[in-house]
Length: 113
Image: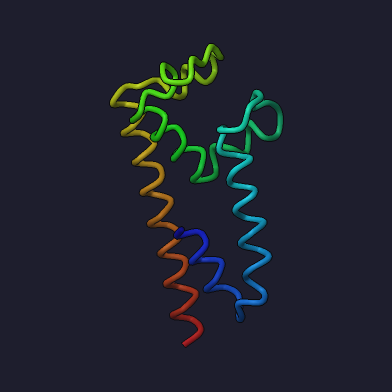
């Protein structure tokens, strides 16, 4: 949400923002790690840089998604393990990213005034 707010603050109209926000949302879904398949290559390198990746890790840890959905993938089992450290790490990273995006939004809006 904070990333979307930042993108909206950079652009001058809602007509410009809407296609970019839709593309950004689709990118977040792909990079979150929630889609079937392994995160390999370029996607594995870029995924930790987006908030949805860390949000998905926290969500899966909070509801014990591995046991609920009977996931046998070892990579997902490591990232989605239902322990406090997984939840805390994901929450901390998402909160940090939110603060960064809100700060950038503030700076852009302050510059436009």
